[in-house]
Amino acid sequence: MRRIIFVKAIVVIMGLIILGAVSGCDDKTTNPVLDYTASDDAAEVIAGNIAYQTGGTVDQMADLCLFATPDGLTRIEEKYPNTYFIFQKIYNPDSQEWEIHIERERGIAGYVPYAFYSRDYRLQFLNAQGFPQQYYIAGGDTARTISFDVLEGSGIHKTHRISQQLNELTAQWTVSNAHQDNVTINGNYYRAAVDTISVFNRMRSSDHNLQLNIVDVVVPRDGDTLMVDAISGNISGHFHADIVFISGANYSENTVDRDINITFGGGRANIALAGRNYMADLMSGELIQ
Image 1 (spheres, rainbow, N blue to C red):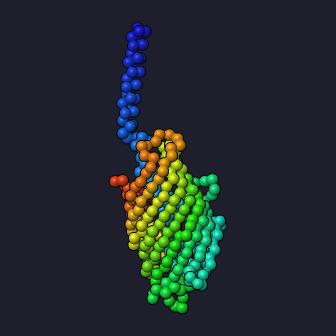
Image 2: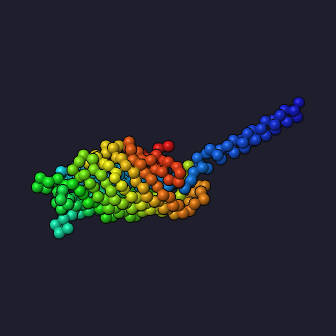
Image 3: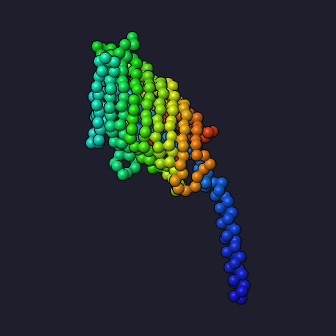
């Protein structure tokens, strides 16, 4: 009797082992841990690089659109009460340009999300005839065009999956229809940083750069955070990264190159790369799963 029970127990155990093996095989085709790719990492990094709260591309657009208002060069400090914020501006009468320095903090250090960064801008207002003027409105003439350069930037930001050290930031933008409620931005954008990415119990570093071509992106002229929901247009560009795997499983690529296309709308960014589409939240810089 005992022998029969023992044999039955062995049969049950073997059945469970076989079932577990089969389930394990199924997981290899459906488990996101195993399916995670270099393109997934690229999308995570790009999402953080373009968002508002992280000090990405949209954040610089917000600053620019606030400057394109009658009191934008003075009102910007009112946007950040009870937070660390430094704003300095100098007008160069020879070049007829503003030189602007900003330092800002979003969030609380040690918590997520968090960002601390500095930016140096160069800004010039041009009237209807294309001549420089000191202010957005000067002598009753409202600027029609704005020349805006990001000269340099540094800082850090953290999301739930990304921790970034920004190394280099430059941009050259032209704003047309600056006297309208919605302005149009054209130009280029370059960002280089090192990200530590933690997803599905895996960690790796991404030493990367992002080059963007901005063509006819339409943004509300005010710079309020609500502008994030109203940005529309497309951006194309290229993403390059050198990956170092720190812990957990890796994927086959150590060097990643992806052509990208980003479509703005409804407060989100559709990031298309390598035949896939990823949806990112333009405010937080997080991918929407």
